[in-house]
Image (tube, rainbow, N blue to C red; front, side):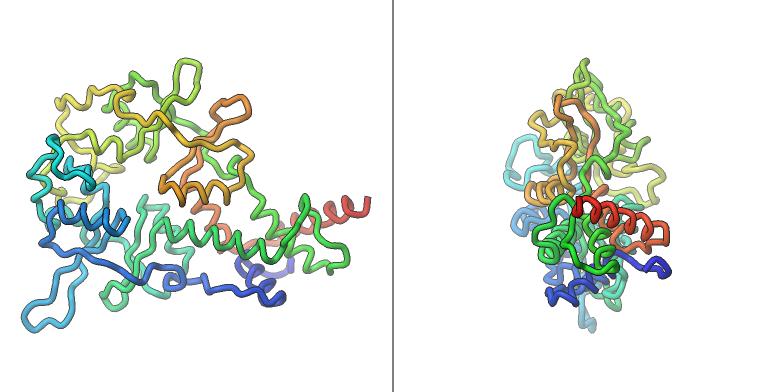
Length: 373
């Protein structure tokens, strides 16, 4: 095994076949995408878009131009996201009659805010390519197009489901692995494969989390949050007190909720992270808001020893983008995001070299030595 190039997904598929464990395909976009796609049209208003997103519990939607004249099918135009709508100062899908919701924003047509020519995939695009695209371009949804038609969408939710599905499959392959020690009597190749899979699935958030933290204080302003977010190209800011203890969290969505109404998406491509979304007048009073006014104070967190699948399950169920990581003394140690988990998932599809195999074999020898002691 050390003399060939292979991936962890290869190993899981081979072991599943040997043990007669049912494994659904998970190699290309069509294997894991959401195929039942609901679309919006250019003439839908922002209010209708908000109601659509609330009704279908989605944060992104493809936008099409319906057929007319001799056309037989709708034409794909682009995508609209919850962030696009938030930037219009129309945050409340549940209560669009709220007084401080700008009525102009609710009446605006999607043709003015749709993101045209977005990054897309084909049904046969490899999963790892989709993941890489989403990480590189800071996007949460990729439409899947077949000859220009929308046949599916791939979101971070699909990728979290894939990650949790792999956890379930490995659980069937190894029902009771104790401390990384596998049953005696297995051949060397099988033991090596088992150790490789188990070492990946046993990762904790401490191994994949972002450790270089950028923290702001409760009295820092919204303007400062925008500056830091853009410079670091991050979506979440941790808010800490003078002792360095976590007191809140500010996301890019929290920032957008507090910016004033903007009429439409600029025609030129952005040069900075979230440039279109964060653009506002330098004199806007909202930029002086202290973060303690907009931050989320009850922040879900995990301990540094939390497994990556437990973290993925929490992010999936709570529909959130990150979890601060604390140690036993409640000191802030890092932050694990959906992007970090996407990188962990990407490793499943990346080729491994000889050194990786050799390390796994050494780990197996250590495991067998523990078993025989």
